[in-house]
Image (cartoon, rainbow, N blue to C red; front, side):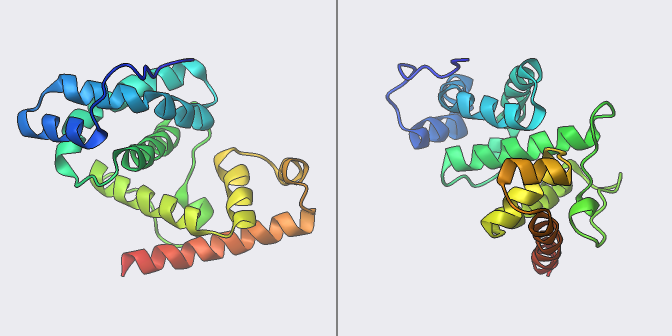
Length: 189
């Protein structure tokens, strides 16, 4: 799937973003988003494993960006968009009744429930914190956590994919959960 057209604009990400913020010119935001929409699609595909759902998500994310871009300070648009996309995917997986529910409590054993009274922004902050903490894990822990919890692989499948021993996989997941708990607790301070 080819979503990105490099001939769309020679303007920098920063100038397109500044134009949108200055006069709410949707054309500028559209050019900026289209430039990075292929990355958005592949991030969604990684989480949803469904091409149509991923294409729909690309469109839904653009609609959300119209307001979201104005509310946050964005230093590097592609990095910011990547995090927003991952958070969106995690929220969708969590809220979907037809898919496996990813509970952050499965990662860490402390109160991290997404209470109905929490706003979308609060939920997004918590998921962003979790994503940041996952990225900080040592590679073997991060890979094992990602395969086991996000991609819903069983221990044996994680062993087959990674080549780690069963004992190591269980250890990486256990240590990864402990490290996530510690990281999330530091984020709350």
